[in-house]
Length: 603
Ligand code: G6P
Image 1: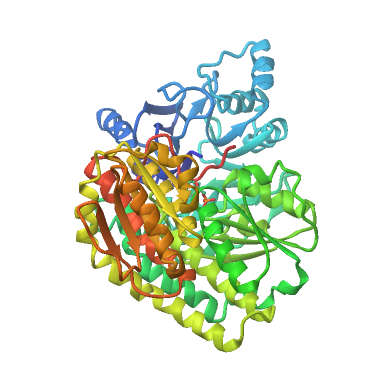
Image 2: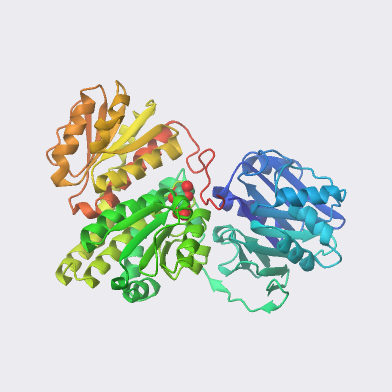
């Protein structure tokens, strides 16, 4: 996790770096820092706490310079503290470094350096990079960076400056993202595109072990052997507005409200010519006898939803695996397996490892990714892109909805190719999917009643989510969303499992959120609701349930009619808004929940 940025150019680097860090704060936010090059060394300001704390420090001690690096941290090695914050400067005050990733052999390297008399200031793994770079430096920063890269094991995206090379900023990466921004007034390195969007839409995506040497008027690329590389400059389609709150109090609310549009864009991306359509048209599902979907967090929940849709439409068995488990289980997969990787960032460490494991066993990998140029997008055999735009809030909303849309369409197309549904049925399903954005808009218009209900729910210590079949799948996401941002304990259960344990936790003042979009199972979920109500619980019923009768114990939020297969896309809007308003009423930092980061690039 962690976000890094660097700038060299004509402008003052300090506000550029601080502004860029604001866009990267979703990657980590327990401390932040900047280092600015000055004639005889570096000006470094680092501060535990949110970026605002760093800004206050900078207001007291303004810095100026045309080259600098900055970092926002999610601690892995060494507690959040001023000294453990980045940038790290070697003990000779010669080299300054920002690092995103984990250096796995740092203890061994640190011992060696200490043996040679180097004094370490912090408890971090990252400081080893600065110290090692100083140790190797003999007048050529790029040479030192290459030697560091060869010595360290683990993952890294690095920005490196040296006092002896006043106009040079060097970047290198392995297993963590890094982009190079190209602008008229200067050049950037950054962990993600939004950090540079204010200045440029022209970027290059670094591959592992590629080196970028940035100066005010040039950017040059090299491979690890020092051979020059030609890299393509790409134009990003995201705009500055995408990366701003646009008048909303939180990115999460803005991103929830954007869902009709991003769904429309995502659906269109498959129907009109382009990458997504090509990939779906090209993939020959009849080559495979098994589908495995693997992912982490909400992306995993999208996979759980998709399993119901794939199995129903394709009549093919689908496994859904947490990537962190899949990578170590010696999965039974081969060249006849299609492994689908779902990831907003395309950089989640476990999902990357799962992809590589699948490839090593000759499975075909298909990724569903939001970030163009990310590791998973580049390495998977095939990639579908969600058209969600930049998602800044740590808790995913619009990316999740776009993942669902692509998975639905994929399963419909597979079902046709497998001869399991007719073209008439295909058109019927596609029509229904194309109506989802309008249905979502109609739910968003009822935001006030959801807000009002949620505002009464701040006091619950525990909230349970239940559903059956595909409603159970989306209950998992509802529960995750709530716990992520509201810090209320919550769990999701299949309705039928309630009596096998969970009901013992139900008492006066428990809230049970019941999802009901499977008409054939309505009676069953309502009998679960009755069982918990008779034990003192209150029930929030979400679904298309025309027969539901509200009481003082049961509140119903109705959803538009439609096939149960695609109902998760509607339920999830209510679940997101419910979680959002519970957290908002508790006054919590919704976009940056404690201990979490958006992009989990470490194990
Ligand atoms: C974090 C985020 C989640 C996300 C998960 C997987 O936990 O907070 O919103 O679902 O990582 O991330 P990915 O980028 O792979 O979708």
